[in-house]
Length: 137
Image (cartoon, rainbow, N blue to C red; front, side, top):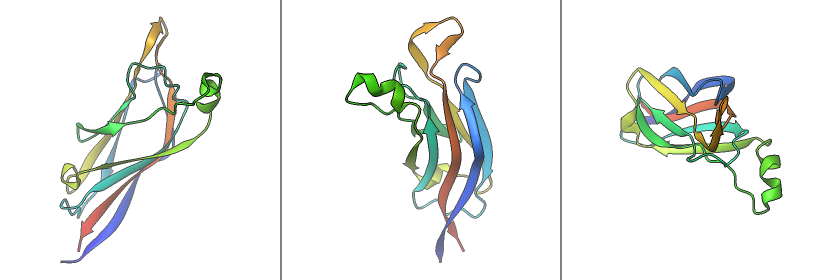
């Protein structure tokens, strides 16, 4: 059996998550996936401010695989500045969570520690979401 690496682009552009939309989901295909090896989701993130109760959850096929991590700065004066930058993040997970065919990627927004009406969730943007997986040939 030959096993190759493959990838599927889930989001080509950018998606805003937070008060405007508490959750984002997108379908993606991993036909021919070899589930005996780990898989990885990579993405860019900006705007996450580290003032939420928890970091936003990431799920594949309704299974929790990790969280979008806010960047914490040693100088509290820089927290707001740091949220403006783009950061690459990667989450590895068991390839057995992927289906041979259609899958669903989902990100849930995080509630703020001190919510106010109209501003209950930490607003952030993700982009260029890619699933890397092994494929059986």
